[in-house]
Image (cartoon, rainbow, N blue to C red; front, top):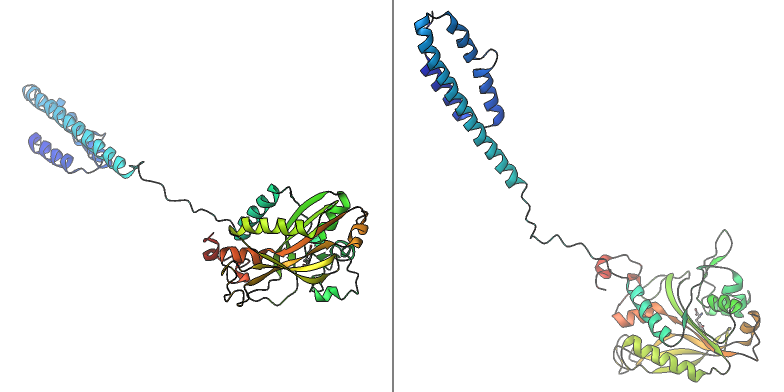
Amino acid sequence: MEKIDLKSLENKVRKKIEKAESLKELDTIFKEVFGKDGEVKKISKIIPKLPKKQRKIFGEKFGKMKESLMEEFEKKAKELKEKAEKEVEEKEWIDITIPPPKAPIGHYHPITLARRKIEEIFQSMGFEVVEGPEIEDEWHNFDALNIPPDHPARDVLSLGKTFYLKSGGLMRSHTSSVQIRYMEKNSPPLRIIVPGRVFRLDAIDASHEIDFWQLEGLMVGKDISVANFKAIIEEFLKRFFEKEVKIRLRPSFFPFTEPSFEVDISCVLCNGKGCQVCKNSGWLECGGAGMVHPNVYKNCKLNPKEWQGFAFGFGMNRLVMLKYKIPDIRLFNSGDLRFLHQF
Ligand code: DAH
């Protein structure tokens, strides 16, 4: 009969329990002791073979040892479980008071901002905001505007720098085409503005683009005069630039207006005193205008004896550049976020 040293077995197991660092490890130790082939099982098999007297004493001791080891396992298991829970808690702790990372905020393009402002001003003066197609036909872009194919104005106005499409049609070279589209469908009295993209084959530089914006306007009624034009444009410019702006009309020529004029505005940067931008003249070119030509009415099946009115076409990029002090027209289409983020 081999001698069984319960004390040293117990100590050995206790030490192992103490060293266990995880529930898994503890479970392995438990199986080693209480499992099917564990030490305890081995001992229990021996007990019935002991002499009766010894069996009782040994059995009691053995029972106590098992109980105390069991307790030890349970204690350790509880401890390790708490430790594991605490670790998870610490790892997964979320501070709900920390402000979230800022979502990047988009910016409106300066053309969009200006367009909204322009629309608001003209709408308050009874104008309707109208759009037309960017892909046009010869009739609306030229012929109906009193510019027949061989007319020198096509070159003079650089309207000849038109992009023609293989599929027929063209990219509109000015927003004046929308005057025709509108008057073909609506009879006067009418007041419209058309902010829109136009396209011209040009050499791109700081002040020339091939894809830019125009602001077209048209007001037709029974007795609309140049005086109405002046008053409305002055009011518009004052509200757009948020300061008093003078205008100057110079005689000019456009096939679709008679009389025609160039519109200059007092320099909004130096207030007319003279600076680099206005080349010391105190004036800035803003666009063309005039009284709608009788042929234009006729082409829209309107009676030129019955109706009269003014039209204008301003360079919208120019207005926006002056308002926000943008030095180079190429910035508008650059997609440069450093530019866009400023608005
Ligand atoms: N369409 C002209 C251009 O692009 C600008 C213009 C001039 C428009 C006079 C008008 C106008 O409506 O009356 O050069």
